[in-house]
Amino acid sequence: MTEPQFGGSEHGNTPPPPPQPSDYQPQYPPPPGEYGPPAGYPPAYGDPMAPYGRHPLTGEPYSDKSKLIAGLLQLLGLFGLVGIGRIYLGYTGLGVAQLVVGLITCGIGAIIWGIIDAILLLTDKVRDPQGRPLRDGT
Image (tube, rainbow, N blue to C red; front, side, top):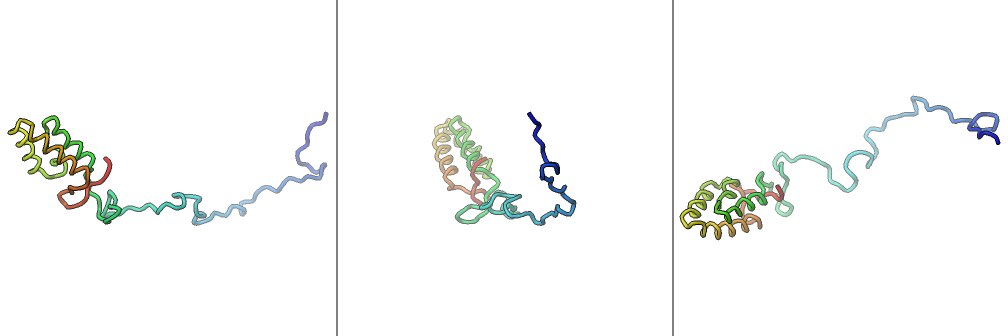
């Protein structure tokens, strides 16, 4: 049995010449789709006027406050701590008023007001003190 022969001039096969440094030409900029976001995605950029993004329908910049966190904090009213969600948003006066009503009514008024206010917060009916819509998520 004979050993396989790779390359060499005895079989008529000549190896390709080694690559030369001039064969490597960098391409600037790289071809589309080779680097960066996949095709079909918008280019990544930051909007200094809207660091948390913009509302898709109105184009208004989102608030730095989350409606999910505000709504969940407002649901603490079920445990007698109503107003925490409003204080988180920056409506300190309204939050303290809700806490006082909760104390005066022994929690009954707090539970009702807290549930209604949490629903309003979670359904985009409330904005932050600067008038911006609350952002989704955390």
